[in-house]
Image 1 (cartoon, one colour):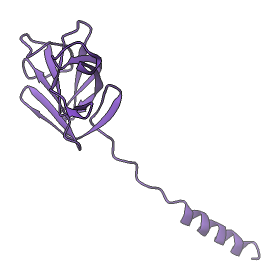
Image 2 (image 1 turned 90 degrees about the horizontal axis):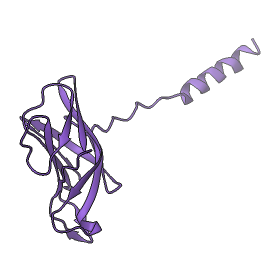
Image 3 (image 1 turned 90 degrees about the vertical axis):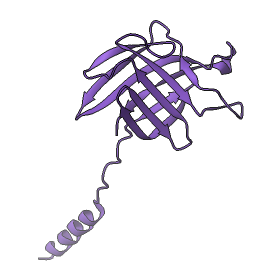
Length: 153
């Protein structure tokens, strides 16, 4: 009996301290623009356009030539896609050197690809080091890279 009461107290203390917090909700959409991270607060898919926006008003738009319906790899175009299995990426709302920047648009570099997957009825698009330009010139602030994953919410 003299060991029973301390054992019960130890069990109560350990059970009281052993609270588990629920895991954090996953971030479904995130992208890096010139290595600066962004998290989408909403991501929608409408026909042939996947669109996301973050809390600062910066957005990524991905336009497909035709609505994707199956998993696949898409080449990135330099402007609105004009053939199947192509898409365009536009980044808007970015601030460069304390000034609003014009939209950055994909350049169509031959190695730029987007991998599209469907799961649970939702589309997800992943991409890495896609070259973008704001079409002003070739200065470093006019070229940028974007990587990330956009997942319909």
